[in-house]
Length: 168
Image (cartoon, rainbow, N blue to C red; front, side, top):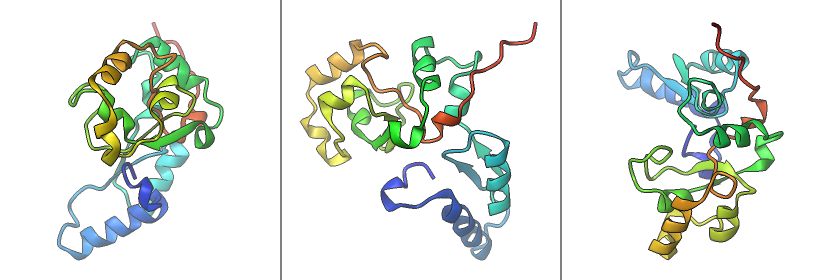
């Protein structure tokens, strides 16, 4: 599901369509992994029922104690009440964060919190608009804290519950 938001494709149609294509084209043995908006066992069960072999969870695990994300990042994600209205889909961050660094695989239109100063400063630029971002913009973004910079999290982020302390 990731990266296909601009086409309006949800997991409800993408997974069974992909499964049918794989099965019809001699790739039935290729595992199909669903990603995007899966936050709990209900989402896992739904993805499996649609034809996925497994799921990949991003936002759900970024707030765990084992995650390497900065604490300020985790707290911003945990504060989200409704990820469908508090996040926006944009590729602006690809132009502000160097390729290959955490949270930027490049060429990926992801979701981030809509209230960030970075979004107000740069807007919802598309990949084609990336040329308008200057080296000074990138330097500002790199120095910004998580109270102002983009916080990557999915539309399901409002469903993330605070993690329990690790068992001792």
